[in-house]
Image 1 (tube, one colour):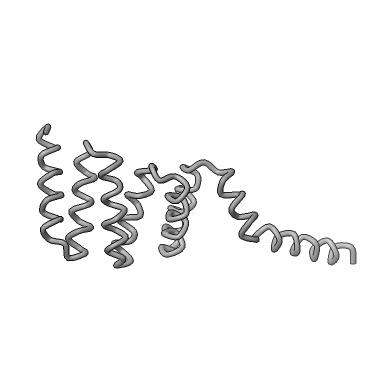
Image 2 (cartoon, rainbow, N blue to C red; image 1 turned 120 degrees about the horizontal axis):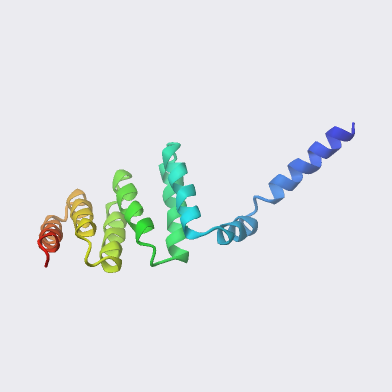
Length: 133
């Protein structure tokens, strides 16, 4: 009988540990890289929408985390959330203005979102950076 009581207490404790306040504290105890890895694990498990939610929380706390914005641009594109994808891809370009790949990714996000002129402009910028400019 003692085991049944212990199990019940453990279950209650686990449920209590899943409150939004506890989860928020737990998120802040992890590094941004660890939080990114958790989101990537969710994506790899096929839980792309959950992964995007976690990365959105991450960039809310760390607006300068280019890798998270880059992943959000790609993952939002897969979810056909094109406006979000373009917004995150633009942010990567702001954070990494000398990285040609950032502008290539922006071009892809814009193209998928039907923003052809902006896609062509981003691709031209990427090529210019690749050429050393």
